[in-house]
Image (tube, rainbow, N blue to C red; front, side, top):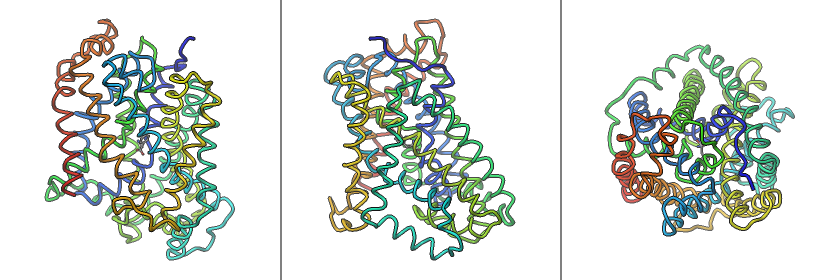
Length: 444
Ligand code: PHE
């Protein structure tokens, strides 16, 4: 059977950018920059994004494209049988991350629904706080929304690559940019917004230490969706004529643009209202709604914001779902429709304990972490870095000739940085990732 391909280059770029742009950009990035030294963090982060993130992304997309197969088979074809365990690990990572990512995705739907139905009218700051606590710790409501989120993922993925994921990305990514632009303008025109801009951009080099560097590299990986097979899978539907480095550069650029815009959206608003920028997870679900409630047309602004979060989350979620679906379809020869429904159902079930962990199952712990935090911890600190290191080693050492041929489109499109890329993959990127892995497991 002929493998399905993206309908266009733009379609691929938007889908891959959709995967990259997620809760990591809008929720985590602004808050990390604020906490880790503003402009100083930004500079280190951008350096990693380009030097290491871009190289690994080129390797992942190229690995998928050469093999025209899911991550498990791609590692096997390009690296040999013993490397296929890393492909399997990538599929497992996507599976586990989606199980709890979808729980958070469900919260964004809950907020959209509640804003539309006027459920937040007249809420004060404290009420937003108790509402968020009550929502996430409830035993049923967040699970219903988690199911709704997975169901929406199914509706998109079941229609395939160009008819499902690409089509959805072509509608949702422009929508994301429109919502973001609207909100940034509103935030920057608030009185006192400049203090937030300064906090965001002024470099404070006293923060430059191992923790900051590790946080910057970790965030660069997570935000680009590296290490979990998403870009290997998306790359596997890419045609032979496209330029991989060029597409990867676009994806990195769009991801960075959204992160910076999210900084210009969130920090000025937080400063204009004298709120705490380091509020962590509560920032998006508690602090911001409280701010919006104070503004004229606050409900509308709030709706735009939670729609933005939802769009960012669902376009990332479908890339994870597709990793697992592609693996099962291809390895077990099951139809895409049946696979999509069953995989989503199982991921939903696996996500239920993560949701309960924030409420009734809060006491159930693994290595002193509740289930939600435990899954985040092992995937972030072990699985993602291992997957990324394996990709670099396969690209730089084991299969370099094949990668070089693929990246230059069989010599038709010379890639001037090929030698730099090779050494980044061989030594620099694996060493940097291994260092962050050791640092975050033992020293933080
Ligand atoms: N890159 C996404 C973000 O920034 C997160 C993500 C991770 C998405 C893994 C897909 C796969 O939020």
